[in-house]
Amino acid sequence: MPDLRLIGPLLRSTPAGLKRALGHSRALPNDLLKEASRRLGITALLVAVLWTAATIADHLAIRMQTHGDPRWLQLGSDEVFAAVGVSASLALYFFTRRTDRNPAFVLDLGLVYLVVIAFTIGLMIHWHAVPSNWVVSPVISWVGVAVLIFAAIIPSTPAKTLVVGLIAVSMNPLSMLIAKARGTWDFGSPANALLMHYPDYLIVGVSVVIANVVRRLGQQVAQAREMGSYQLGDLIGSGGMGEVYRATHRMLARPAAIKLIRPEMVAEGGGEAAQLAVKRFRREAEAAASLRSPHTVELYDFGVTEDGTMYFVMELLDGMTLDALVSRAGPLPAGRVIHILRQVCESLAEAHASGLIHRDIKPANIHVGRQGLTHDFVKVLDFGLVKSTADRGVEEHIAAAAPSVVTGAGLTPGTPAYMAPEAALGEPVDARADVYAVGCVAYYLLTGRLVFEAETGVKMMLKHTMEAPVPPSKRAGVVVPEALERLVLACLAKEPDDRPASALAVSRSLAAIDGASWDEEQAAEWWRASASYQPPVPPVG
Image (cartoon, rainbow, N blue to C red; front, side, top):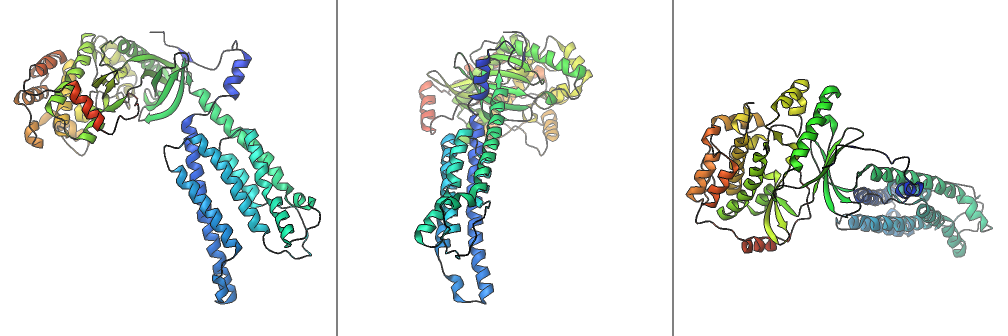
């Protein structure tokens, strides 16, 4: 594992050509393009609403001016053009609502939409007969305004913005030429069409500047997402501590998930507390990286950015977490529960043997899915925030310097619904706290319900310290092998000494339970019948 390092700007020795390639040819992140396509859809919907409202308002104004003359209900060319504009706008809106659309294609389609709307506006403005004494004078039209708006909401290259902008504003002179051909407006020389609308052409120049600014901002985001040897992609998860991004190794093209931990969520106020937090981060990341169980999520790398943001680079998994599994499938059969828990215990047994306590075992931190040709393969997540039993002095030093380092978001000793009584009471914990959490997870998998339910986390922790759990078979009315129920209740004992001594002991007890089985054929069949796999998901705790 490499030393902790700062990931900063490109070095001065970086070839100028590479800097230009990274700075000017970098593709925009896909999530930014998706957000822009969403804005485009909303803009199209707004255009449809405003166009409809304006048309209705015009008719109401005619009615008021004519004192109810039936002509206010007559439809003409303006209504036809409005119908075309509204139809095109609604079509684009509904097209952007589909999440499977390629956002780059959607944005290109938005530029085509801009030209269509510009032509419709131009025809509407110049369709009607104009008095012969009308003087041609320069104006800024709605087409120019639309070009500016689209430059701000659609990330595009300056060249593409220039070409599309020139085409769009040319729809006004083109409409004037159509009016001249129809005999509704004799404005003299065709050059007068350009004279009247030259301010729109000047606006195109402004739109190119805006488009360049918008694109450069997006490229800066892409560059900021480059961490070490990894290029960050889409945002695929977020929480109290920070965000999780899909990432790819530049040289190996290996997919990964990068979890960013914001510095303010680790140590408020900075100073000594922040330095101690980074030391703890390094110590625990190195310990987690030393774990080799196939059922522990693999940690590829870790580091600290220049602004103090800590990050983990982990494998990207294919499947879902146990809470998502129960939400989809409901309570699981006993054989499948045993199969899953044995893998969880294998991961924990190695960690405990290395002096590490997970402290936050819960369904959201246990992933199940496909690994190679094996189904229902378990990975225990978030081993980057474990606690080492071999260095309690450092832990106490950190807590004394800044309690938020220990109790801040994401670094709490556990989750109330799965927290051992001794942890809830603030007492020292050991590996048997993880055993208690395994019992809570088993209870949830068998029943689809928490061991204890309460309105607040504090009340829930009190129940864990004081109330006896209802046996799973009685709680949900499900069939649970007697030996499995005894084991689950033993894991949920209030006193650590009354629980199984280790995760390894729990695994052996699970293996000895008869009458409940779950094999690869059953697992593969379940996944085939479950509407295929979920997209690869990050290890999010």
